[in-house]
Amino acid sequence: MIICHCQRISHEDIDHAIDWMRASDEHVMITPGKIYRALGKSPECGGCMPLFLSHVQANPNAAVPAELANLRGKRRVRAG
Ligand code: FES
Image (tube, rainbow, N blue to C red; front, side, top):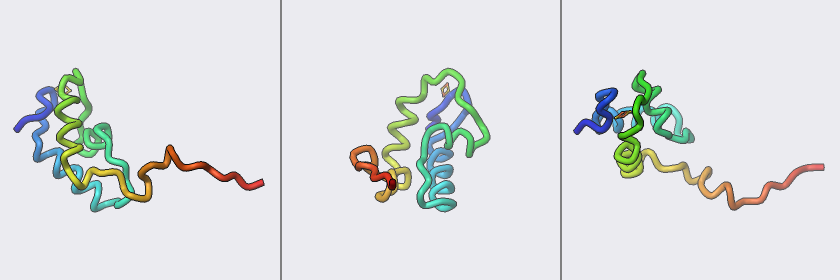
């Protein structure tokens, strides 16, 4: 299924890009921008973003790595 019509990106293209990024770096934060970059493309109209994002979120390989999750709620302790 084509997800992004401007750039002719299919759901399979997105899944392959996610799998490749996760295999390359287990700590990478996967974003739509990085997926476009991995595919050598860039978004144009942005009309596909809701479907694009829901497809990315449905891929378990795109989840935020556990050690990076909930960082906003953690307090930073500064030395000094
Ligand atoms: S449909 Fe994806 S950028 Fe236009």
